[in-house]
Length: 118
Image 1 (tube, helix red, strand yellow):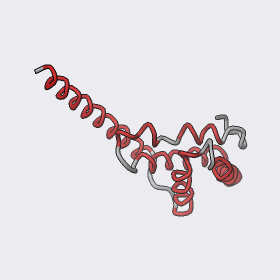
Image 2 (image 1 turned 180 degrees about the vertical axis):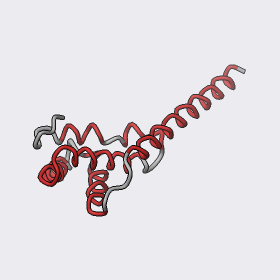
Image 3 (image 1 turned 180 degrees about the horizontal axis):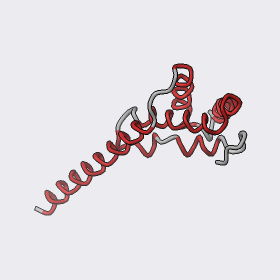
């Protein structure tokens, strides 16, 4: 009986976590609507590079940050990063959200670009 209870509680906990992650992903999507096509492409590229923003992809992520800084400064960088986060959270399973979040990694990679403080 105890094993059954433990399995049931585990499934319930998983469902609650899954529901919370789905809500979080929905909120991220709602806060960051699609950008103009040229910037949307940059956001998609950033979403692809994001998991490696502090590793193999750091140079490319910093290059994107530098270009965005030249084009519109910190506000444009924030808009594209927010959209990239929304794209990344929209991919794959919600329970893996913690591994898919790129915002903090890119934030740290962009430290020192223009007025960006990571």
